[in-house]
Image (cartoon, rainbow, N blue to C red; front, side, top):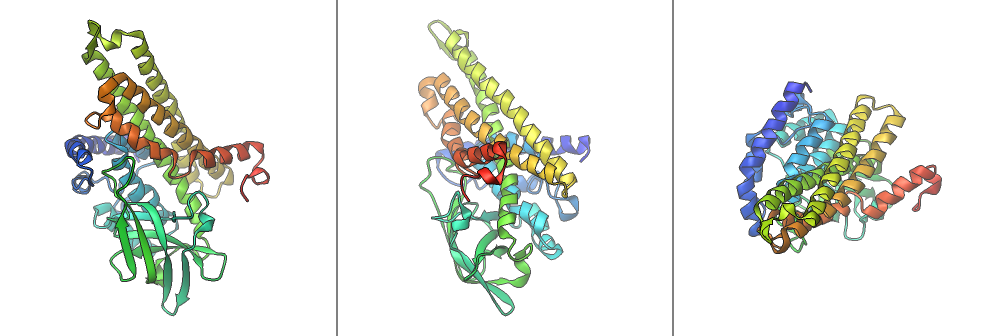
Length: 390
């Protein structure tokens, strides 16, 4: 992607964010999905940012895409979660492991907004350890028969197609499939009892004897776990970039408020302890940006040389580190911003309070803090021999 193309994409993202904001503010207060999100994303052509141009995307490199996600997440973690579900873990596995037919079937339509995508891995009793999933598949003539329930899936209620993972019935191999949600055998339900992200669509769905065409197998049969883990690297990086956006917006809002709000006869920004909050948010922003961009650059390097195991391992580790650090830094930055805003911080009428509620989930999805710490520590100790879970 040329520098000029990068700037055009980021300018389109900026225009999208500016036009979306008033709608997102109202949708948040009314606790509903923002119906303006998809039309505006279509208008500014940002529904396939890293997808190759030949499939209708913008062909963005990972660093540019990460910057775009950071800007998008200034408008809210719910907004960015839509893009992560649709692109980072929806389009990405199809781009990376899909057959030519699958790519042609789903990528152009998803870039145009004709198909919203989602990623169905988590189950009610299989979260941090996806190997405990109970979804199954079996081959029946000219199709696969799929059964299982997926839970806490971003975009589940609005998706037209979902990447679905299941065990071979009676076997130990996991495979991945792309399923269409307008077919018989699929029932879904929105999950509304959430602490934050009221404008994000989160749901569950159940497949009962769902007939999946043989051609919708994603990658080789039995390669599902590798596809899931590879996709989560993309997902973790998208969360990390989004958390950077939370910190950036908390800093913007806090600086503005510190100059406007007066107490004890002067702007609160002149009080030393208020300045301490601002300094903490800025250090979180600076540190997170450095680590997120380093991780994005490592992913670009790995993408350019996919056969290089060392580059792949480095990209995976940096994505985990960036996600762990940025998610916690964003949570702390939002807490500082809420404290700086005082009573107004404890209100969804103001942005810091919304960020505080929304960003908390970033320490859970795409790899909990605890799982990522174990991954990082095991790598430092020497790898698989030191993995806490076998």
